[in-house]
Length: 129
Image (cartoon, rainbow, N blue to C red; front, side):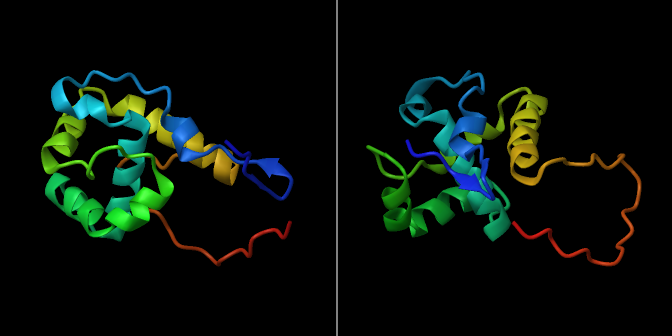
């Protein structure tokens, strides 16, 4: 695997960030690599997928694109596979891995206290490399 870097800083890939997730799946769902399934969900949701069926549909619509980027030996996962993933018990573990990736990518993620409004301020241009 090649090392990704930006501005001379190594970038943690999504696959690396989610490789340590505990895998409690059973049955046919285990034929898919858990970190790859998580990446599919992370890609599909910002593209408008709001549930497991829509995530599966998003994957089915992009089979060729996905095959270029992942080592799927099977067809894209079904909605049942994603359903099993969405029912995993501890969302805080997922959040910790996601935050690790964001922190590595952006530097620091400032947590927003629950229930507080976020005020939009003037945009600050990014620091050039």
